[in-house]
Image 1 (cartoon, rainbow, N blue to C red):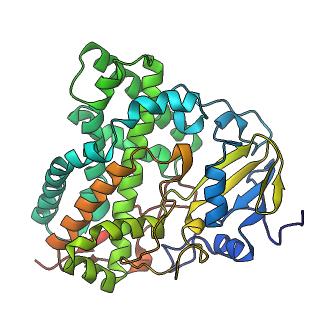
Image 2: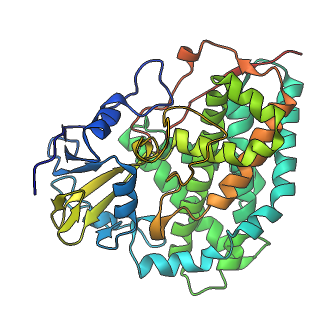
Length: 398
């Protein structure tokens, strides 16, 4: 096997000025040199690995059971990494992963999520009513992008209304990529403790929600705690950042925004295109369980690879004009929700939320525009698990 043509020594920490929606230049450059590159994991004792940036190879690895998601197998530093806590199935392989995911699968079906549409429409209307009443300018993140998915996922899992604010702050603290290690640990511990209390409350007094339904299964309290943390964190942060960053992208592409306003039927492909174009869940890691050939290279057993979703979704061999936001795009099949056994469990919920929220926003505020120059919009750092904006100041004609 020949040596790859490109080596990446570290992933970039920021995006190019003026290009908030594009992957960092170093990643795009790596993709131009080929779909797979040698890579050194960050840190003073970072281990050698691989970076995969091409669509076909990312999809191949995600579907290959010879690559593990197990947290304790990540070979990126020179010290032992503990396994994922019970219930946190994103960092597990089958059969443990399947045991946790199976009882959840029927609760996030297309049909069940569509039944939530009316409630999501009401939540969205309430948020936009409050935003309009307060008047311009507004921060679209706090007025619109965060509260909609927060209320939806909290109602779905049965989080009491009065707890939503503090819980949302805790999730934000360990997902934003800027919290100190000490504060990160404190926020994570507080969230774990809250989830433990929530599970105990559902055991004692079940209500009409997903978590109460799960108390009838053979899952332990500790396992339910881990599952609830994963669902609440993923269901809140990813969709919130898609709504905010997606609105930013539409405002920066006025012809596409006008097309969406003019044709309500465009909302479904628009959501898929925004998911592809933005890829807020930027990357994931997998570890080879045995020697595996990928893209003409042998990835040795025990080696951890980084899968770059944002470059895979901008791969010119898969998508025509990949760096163009085209709401009428025909070449679908993005990897924004992943692929294989770990494909996002809540993807149908996220789609419903985005369809409802984007449609309502662009029609309710036809003169919506940025209240600051685009280069002044504060972006999350690349160190954040989920990419997005910290705030999005907008205004409109009254």
